[in-house]
Structures are given as C-alpha cells and as structure tokens.
Image (cartoon, rainbow, N blue to C red; front, side, top):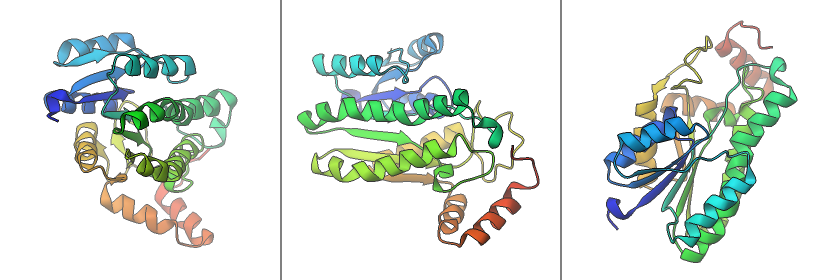
Length: 254
C-alpha cells in the first residue's frame, strides 16, 4: 500500500506535536483526518495541506467518539494509523489537586484514549489490520515535582498500553506508546521550570514518525533523559527523592 492509499487519524491535531505530525504525514502523501475541539484551527489545517479533512471532536464526549468510529466503519474508511495526541497540562503540585484540574486532566489525557481504543479496536480487529499510537510522556515513569495532576495521567497511559499490547498482538494489530521528554509547545512556552534536553515540536514529530514507521512499541526521547529516568525507577526511594529534588531546584512545588 502506497502512502497515498493510507489514512491517519490525528486526535489533538490543532497545536504542538499533533500539528507537526499532520504536516509530516500530509507531506508524505497520506490522507489525514484531523480532530480537535478548535474548529477554526482544523479548517486552517484543511486549507493548508493537501489530503487533509476535518473531524471536530471533543475527546471527553464519549458519544462523539462512538459516532466517529461508527462513521469510519460504515464508510469503509477506517484509519490505518490512529494517533492520540490530545492532552492538557497544568503545572503544579498541591495547588492543582482540585476536581476542576485533575478530573479534566484524567478525562482528556487518559479516558479520551480509552474511549478511542475501546471503539476502534473491534473494527480494526474485524478488518485484520491497523495501528494505534498513544502519546504519553516521560513524566509517566515516576512522580515528578510540578506534575501532580499531569504525571498520573501519563503513568496510566503507559500502564494501559502495556496491559493491552498482548491483545493487539493476538489481533494482528499494532500498538505504540510515545514518551517524549520536554517539547517546545504552547503548553511549555511560559514554564519557568527546568526543562533539560528540550526539543522542538517539529523535531519530536520526526522522531515519532520514524518510530511509528518501524511499529516500535515504545518511542521515547531524548535518550539522555530517557536513560536517567529509567534508571531512577530502580534506585531506593531515599535516593530517588534526593535526586529529583536536586534536579527540580528549590522552587515551591505547591
């Protein structure tokens, strides 16, 4: 199958990594379906890049995802690759532990992905092919200061993908979890937190596409930060908290 015959559905395509991935796949000749809540931005993508169609979607509304999956199935237009990029990020510790922040973060970052997989998997299984990729984060590797409402949603996504990988394998489907480090996006541009090894959204998108082309289960970058955080998972807690505190500096984590 040539790239011109392939379809990708990018959920959360109106900014950051999702927007850059839309550009990459459109330039590569894919048919790109872009989804998000900001209709105006979806229309700009549609008008800017060839082969792009717009599908407005709120990932916190289960009925909208059910309808989108149903329409793909009814029109025999199931995507070859579905990329879940939707997410919200609130910086902070104790101050972010409110219903408004935490429930919204979990609903958007985690349950939106759950709804997407739940509704697409049976259709892809019946067809016998398909790939789903979920953008998580290196912050899901362990608890980090200033990510009290964000990190748990990403940890849940990593755990979810690990739990579902065998089911995808049995169905001859591909599942990937994408764990970027710090990326220059609208969510991070005003942050005054330390952001070592930060990469551009364009650079992140290129690394992600390369990993997805290989159908890697985990796509994680940049390597120095990946290696450091993976190692932190194996040290005793007294050392873990000391190292995290040194890295985070002396900023108030509330």
